[in-house]
Length: 114
Image (cartoon, rainbow, N blue to C red; front, top):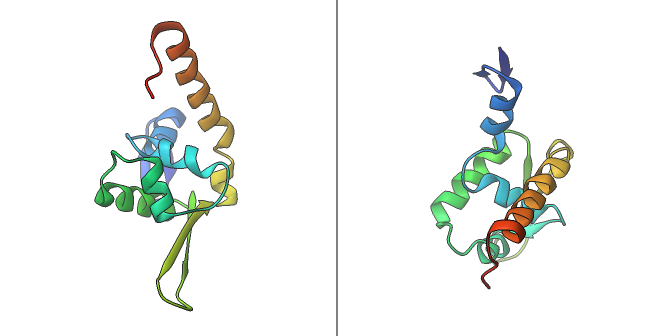
């Protein structure tokens, strides 16, 4: 049995999927690989995600120590930026592998629609 942030997981793969699983977490992490993004920049990268879902997923990733949220309040308008923590950066090889697999599937069995 594995434990992380008070939750128990039956195996290490289950723990990993508990942290980055779901429809949007890996997508968020993929877009943060290249650096810090503001909330609206993330929304533009993922136009089909709802604001509520994006906010909840970012909050969960922040609680798990994967994503860091920085709020600038010195002058209006409020500015919020998201970036990977050092712990979150350990996921980069995994996220890149997931993305590469997706590209290979499209090349072999699908099509790219732009």
